[in-house]
Each structure stands twice: as structure tokens, then as C-alpha cells.
Image (cartoon, rainbow, N blue to C red; front, side, top):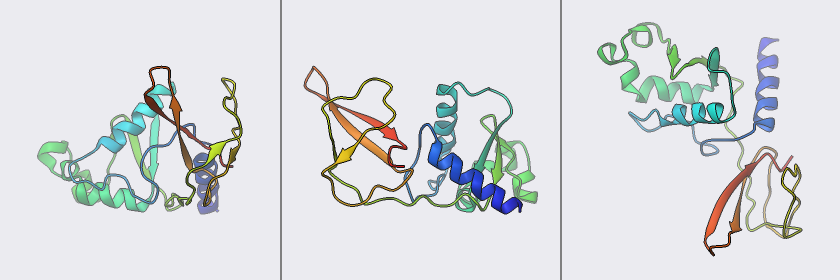
Length: 166
């Protein structure tokens, strides 16, 4: 029963997240010696006004394997200050977040959508729905969509909006 609860929680969180970070289908922490993935997740929480205490980061088994196998600063006792990962497999806390593992966290399916446009030249600030037309491929629930907007200086500014294709 707990596995089903975790799966439901993951699906709800994934499809309703305010922002996304990372590359669909690619487990985080895959570059040795690089913990910037956790720093970027923490940045999103900070930007969203999350409390600064009692933070938990639940990762899937591929991300946990990358932390355990590629982030050697975590299992070198003289650098991490603890032997918990090396001896007991416990990652503990990183950047103020308790690291948890759940098999319910799965790889994100990436749609094949490309070259979509919207049905109008502008939407009001605060709009919660943007209609997409004239593109190819599929946009899956929870996919991230990137819009390129023209700004007065005739340069392009990429803006990332997600959770539009539900």
C-alpha cells in the first residue's frame, strides 16, 4: 500500500509542479564531482518561498545510484565528515535537504512536439491556459514548453513555462 501512495504522490507532484529542472529521461548527478543539480532544486524551493527547515528531496533509484557512485565527495570520509554513505549507504542531508529514495520516482517521458505556436498574439498576465496550435508531434502531460518572446530591443528572451499540456 505504501508503494501505491508513493506512486500517487509522485504523479501528483510531477504533474502539478510549479517549475522543473533537469533533462527529461536523464538522471541527475550524472557528472562526477558535480552537485549543481541539488543546488538548482534548492534554488527553485528558495525562489518559491519554501520554508528553510524540514526540507526533503525524494529521488529515484537512478539519481541515488549517481550520488552513491559518481559523487565521491560524499563517500570520502575526510571530505564529507562522515562514513555513513561509505559504510551504511546513507546519504543523509545535502544543502539543507534530507535525501530520500523512492522507487515511485520514475523517468519522465518526453514528448516529440516541435514548432507549435499559440492561437493569439498575447495572453493576459496570470493566464493559466495557453492554447497551442500548428505544431508537430506530441506534448505529454507534465512536459516543459519553451516560448521565445520578442522584446522591444529586438532580441529574443527564452521563457520557460511548464505544466501547460495537461
